[in-house]
Length: 114
Image 1 (cartoon, rainbow, N blue to C red):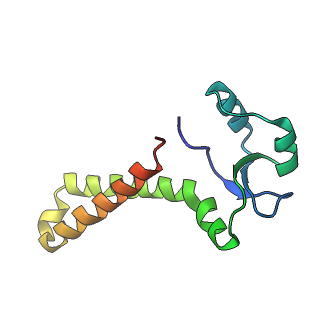
Image 2 (image 1 turned 135 degrees about the vertical axis):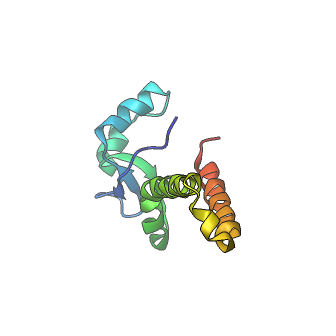
């Protein structure tokens, strides 16, 4: 199953929670055997992504869906540039290209459900 789609936002009712208000999230969770608690939905103002979050970590957590999408796009962009032979003109960037792509792929692999 994919991650809960963004945007992820601050709960209007619980200052330390991050939620999704996507109406499809509830149905997706039900379809995949996830929990559904209407009382919790009402309290938090949406589907809880996480709670008891240290305030300085909230921006990073809320940005996660968009960062994942951007990283996937950057890796695809590197691959398209490579397919067009652009790196042959800048061979000094080959190691950096490989390192960046590997780091991006590693981060995306960590984001996949176990």
